[in-house]
Length: 154
Image (cartoon, rainbow, N blue to C red; front, top):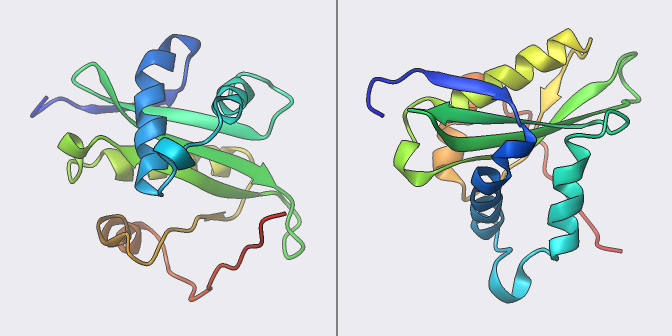
């Protein structure tokens, strides 16, 4: 896998077996594992949304050496400050063994291209303050706007 090119492409149904452990790794990173794991119904619904043209949710996978080693999920939505939809990069994850090799960057840039092609003028995302490795990359490909995210579970 050392000198192989990074390939980013839309997720395909045949990728499920490779996507699932990445999805579970992503969720575990954010504390959703074991007793706090997402219900399987959410995982299955998320997967199905990628293949429903009526859904605004999309996914790319990143390959290195013929292996799926990363994922990115993104969606389009309206904004009160823009005429066209904006793009929210919701999930980004790569396997530990390929971190620092450009897979995350390639996935982000693919979302930029998809958003541009869809007429969006903005891609944004959020991460935890403690995600030092992710933030090191994000600081190179985007601008931190200083916003703090609040949420309330209903």
